[in-house]
Image 1 (tube, rainbow, N blue to C red):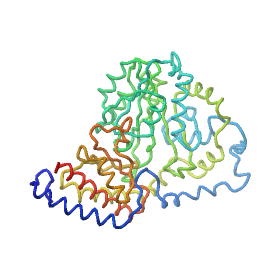
Image 2 (cartoon, rainbow, N blue to C red):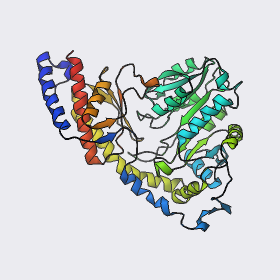
Image 3 (cartoon, rainbow, N blue to C red):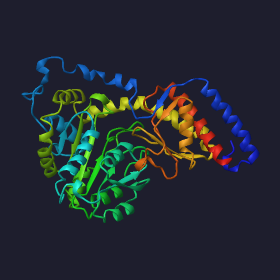
Image 4 (cartoon, rainbow, N blue to C red):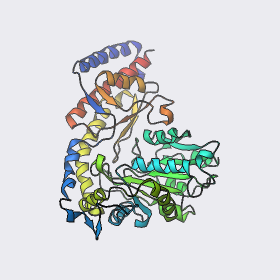
Length: 424
C-alpha cells in the first residue's frame, strides 16, 4: 500500500474511485452500530449480574448492626468507604460514598463552589468577575460541559505523552481567575495516557494564585487494565498534603465499569477539612445516599484483591475488542500515513488523530453508513478541535463481530475523507 502523500494525482483519483465503491457497498448493508460512548457490553453486564442477588433477605441489609434500609450515614457506609479507600490507596475518613454517578459528585463540587465557595474561597465563584478552568485536551467532553454550563472560560491545555503540558499549567495558574483543572490521570479519556511521576509531582506542588484552586482528579480507570496486570498508582491526596496543598484536590471514582453502570457506587476522596466542609453543604441537599446499594457492592466486591480478580474477567472480554480495532487500524491505515493513534493497555477508548481537517467529514460518512461515534470536536473545550483531527473510538459496547464491521466502515470513511482533502 502506497502512502497517500506519495501518490500522484492519477493514483489518488483511482484510489478515490475504489474507496468510494467500498463505501457504497457498506451503505447497502444498512448497518446500525454504536461506538459513541464507553459503555460496557452485554457480556460484561452478565458477568456481574450476581450482584443483584447478594441481598435477598431483610437480615442481609444489616451492616455491623446498622440497618441500611433506613435514613442516616450521609458520607456513606463505613464498610463501603473502607473498600474504596483500599482501592484508591487513601484513608477511609477521606472517602465520601454517594450515589451511582461520579459525574454527579463532580457537578456537586463545582456547583457548591459557585453557590457557596470552596473551603478556601474568598467568596462564592458566582461573585467572581471571571472564572477560568484548565482543560487538558483531548479530554472528556462531560467534564468540559460541566464547567462550561456554569459560564466558566475554558482554557485548553495540550496533552503530552506524560499528561498535561505542565509548563502550560504552571504558567496558567499564575492567573487568580484560574480556579481548577480537570484530570483523568490513569488511562486518560480518550488517549489512554498514564500521567508520569514527574507530572503528578508537579501538579501536587502547584502554587496557584487562587487560594481555592482545585484539582478535579477523575480516577475513573484506576483499576481498569485490560492488557496486563494491575498497575499501582500514586495517591494524589498524600502527595498534595506532603507538598503543602492538603486541600487542593478532590478525587473521584466509581464502579460504573466494575459492576452495573446504571446502579453502581460513586465516591469522592479529599482532605478531612474539605470533607467536613462539603458534608455541611451536602447535608442540606440529601439525608443519605443509597446504602442498600453500597452494601450490595461491599458484599459482592469484598476487597481489593477480589475486585482485581473481577477486573481481569472484564479484561478478557475487552481485550479482543480493543485488539480488533487496533489491528484493523494497523492493517488498513498505518501504511497509508493518514492517521496516528496509541495502543492503550487500559481504560475504555482509543484516540485516533486523522489527517487535519478531516475528522468531521469522516464521522459524517460513518453516520451515513450506519456507524454512530462520538462527535468530532467533543474531546476539546466548547466542542471545537482546532485541527479537526481527533476522533474518540469506543470499542467496548458492540460484540466483536459487530465491532469488526464498524471498524471496517470507519477505516473506509477516514480513507475517503483523506482522499477528498488531498484532491482539493
